[in-house]
Image (cartoon, rainbow, N blue to C red; front, side, top):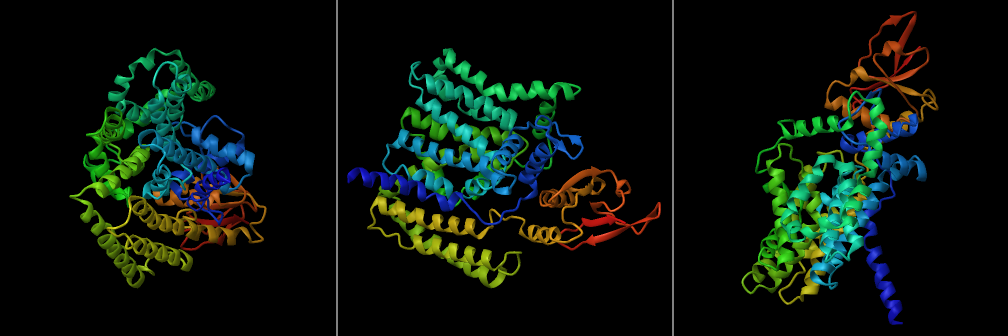
Length: 517
């Protein structure tokens, strides 16, 4: 009987994450970066080219083909549908939650270990990127796996973890190339303590195994290039390390991290500070590692929110520490209870009411999206208002989790984080039903890609085009009865053929579907 109860608890722990991970409704891509990678994956399958990343008829040599390969292989195995495109990210997200669970056990015992992955999957930035077909969650999962394997290395006898610590480095390079140096540099203080691992043949064997995908790809792509692929990757790194469109001031992460790690930011900051006074292992991993990493990223010219995803599991552990510290503090407990049970609910409810009366019709949200968003916010505010001074620590943890859990569940099931280009999807569904378009290949006039706006639109349009054709340098290359997406339609006659607009509207603007008659 007891064993059955334990089995049920194990199943419940799995089941509780399902509404936060899986969405089975209609999906659509955003353009950057997931749409870009999904389109490259489509070309892999269409053209049978698993080696060179493409942008229409040109090579894209500023990145590896790691993610595109995974998306294409997933669609090759499970079907060419959008759900399959998200499976690599979903699998990495699940693995990252499991590793976070194991990290909690390693640092704080198995009691309340389920809390840390629940905090992670209700953190805004992790929740957002775990539902994007990009390499960011996959890379962050690999970094978290590397940290976990490093912690588990106690001696030269831990062969499996020595091997694993080597493997993650090469796989991470295949995902994010030189960005892998950032967590490695941030781990230097702890690596110095465990420097004996570098004398283990299993570490070096793991390093070689991890780099096999990159080495195989690099050798395969070189015959197509004028110089080794590494030089193109270095050029991209140099662009990112100098002033560009993603350049932000040094203090960028000082406000961006608290904003993107909502609603747990304050607890994470308190926990990180508190852990600096803890034992050696906790201090080096839970405090020094994320702080050094943020410092390195702050020096780097390019700064984006998803760069900090690689420390999201660590911040999750620090969040747990921060909550526990505030609960046990005679000095701060009352402030903690007042803030979470009064200030936060009042702010969330006020925000919800303001949105409902003043901003509900400003955006492009439909009734379902607005309803789910409003209900989720109200449940969040209402749940935290039940926090009382007399609650036990376990009760506090449960109540704190319920609010963000319900909010993120409603947000996911509303489609806001999965059907991100809903209006374009609905328009393309209508266009695909037209008799003129059915079973017809549609080409693209690439001369119309003149700015980020037109590029963003054509990426999403192309992904939703049932039969996508080649890229054209101009519409004059169209043959009789052929269809194309173009931005510049002119009433011209060429060899007695004229062009006709089949469909255009503001949602697809500046792109129009034309036919050569």
